[in-house]
Image 1 (tube, helix red, strand yellow):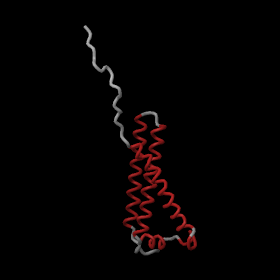
Image 2 (cartoon, one colour; image 1 turned 135 degrees about the horizontal axis):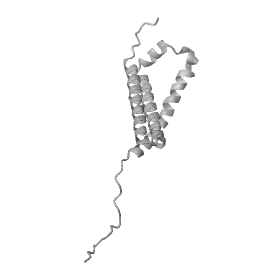
Image 3 (cartoon, one colour; image 1 turned 135 degrees about the vertical axis):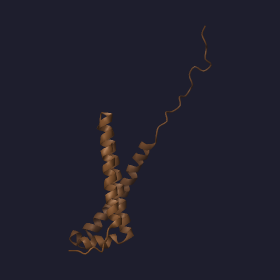
Image 4 (tube, helix red, strand yellow; image 1 turned 180 degrees about the horizontal axis):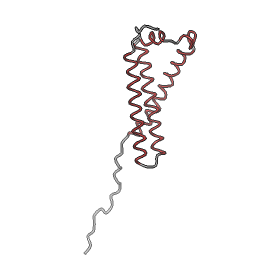
Length: 136
């Protein structure tokens, strides 16, 4: 005795549920890259070309610059975008070239820990910078 199925095969298989993380990551790389071009070129122009170039950069110059919330935001944005942009690129390289799952896991953990430390320390310096420290 055989049983016949009315629809032995559905006309369309349901698509596998996937995260859109890689798409968001790809899009972030493009947008952050464009933002970094503006931030870095502005930084280089102001620091190296205007008003005497690198010869004027000292503690007083940085203190005067970071006394403005605009420049704090500019440098903080550059720090965060550059760190996350670079970390995301390195994550992609690790995913492409690390063959063993355990190697991939530990390389990415080291990457994430280093990213968090650098972002935390850089943000801490920008937010707690005291321009009133007497110069020696």
